[in-house]
View 1 (tube, rainbow, N blue to C red):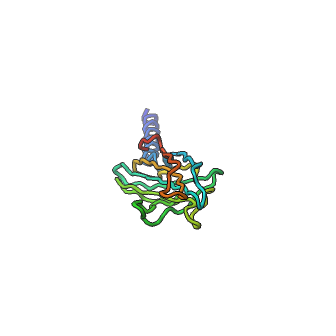
View 2 (view 1 turned 90 degrees about the vertical axis):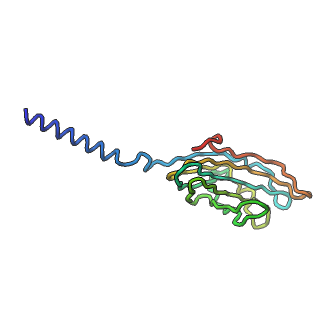
View 3 (view 1 turned 180 degrees about the horizontal axis):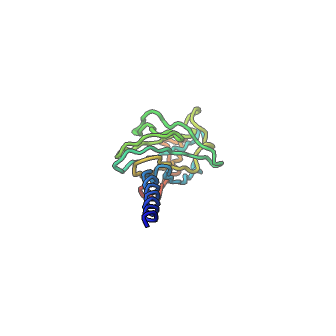
Length: 175
């Protein structure tokens, strides 16, 4: 009887140790949160006549800092990594997000991405406008994101916005 009791207790202890070692690893350690979104990229865009501006905002509405990456893709599914406008101008914020590069976002903070396609001869081509994107949260945070894409005719004075389409991420809900 003593042997049987000893075997049962040793088996129970082995199972308990196995359970404790597995549960000691956080469930989120290897799992990223990913949210996909679409971008209407058939906006007015024609160098010398008009251009397209893409705006994207990511907000950390949570109580912990986040580490994340915003990825953008063109019509062919190829990554778009164009650096956004690096200086603030005309009341706009400078871009603080570069597609494809991981960044930290403090609790309560917001980062922006703004880029003009074919506004100048050195701006990215209209053919490189993103068609969709994804946000990968590597750790922490509770995020919200949104944006818009505008097509502007600048051959008239004053310039006219011909298309202005919102970019809705996760139905406007936190993720």
